[in-house]
Structure formats: C-alpha cells, structure tokens
Image (cartoon, rainbow, N blue to C red):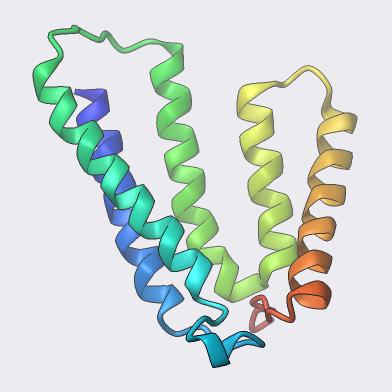
Length: 144
C-alpha cells in the first residue's frame, strides 16, 4: 500500500514540476531549442515514468508492508516536499531550500545538528551560485 501511495505522490509531483518548468524563461541555449526549463522537464518526465513503473510493480509484489518508523519517515518527507513547493514562491529558493534540506536531513539523521545546519546552508548556497551565476538561471526570490 505504501508503494502505491508514494508512487502516486511522485507522479503528481512530476506533473506539477513539468507544468512549472514550462513557464521558465528561455536561457542562453535558446538557439538550440533548449532553455532553462529543458533539464527540469526531462527530470520530471523520467520521474513520472519511474513512478508509473513503481505503481504497476506494486500490484505484482505480494509483500505485506506494516506501518513502522520507516513508513512514518516517508510520510514526513512527503509532507516536507509539499510544504517546500508552497514555500518556494513565497520566501524564495535560498530560505525554503535551507529549511527543506535541514528538515529532511533531521528526519533521516538527528545526531549531528550543527553539521546538518552547516551542510544545508553550504549546499544550498553552492547550488544557488551554480545556477544563478554559472548557468544564468533565475531562481525564485519570493514575495517577502
């Protein structure tokens, strides 16, 4: 049952992501027919196909999953993904990604709080710099 729910969730996320990627501005590779939305569209299509395969395979497997701590973590991460989607447009990429990555890391590993905070901040700033300065892709700044 958990596989079916998670695969449907991933399929919905891939459709929302594809729809959002269609509105990205064209970037420096527009002459080749590629733009800022090309890579996100490809990732969303692959995610959609894989989630469909996972959904179909969930009917073929006879495994009986019981609710346990791992399932709880799955639902918490799914909830964090939904919150992240809503926060991205409101507070921007930097702050929402730091909050999201810190939340996911803390769900998976609560032992090293200071290292988790440092990783979330450094990784997010690194990705922001890569996309905004190197690839010239504008990331959401938020409305606040």
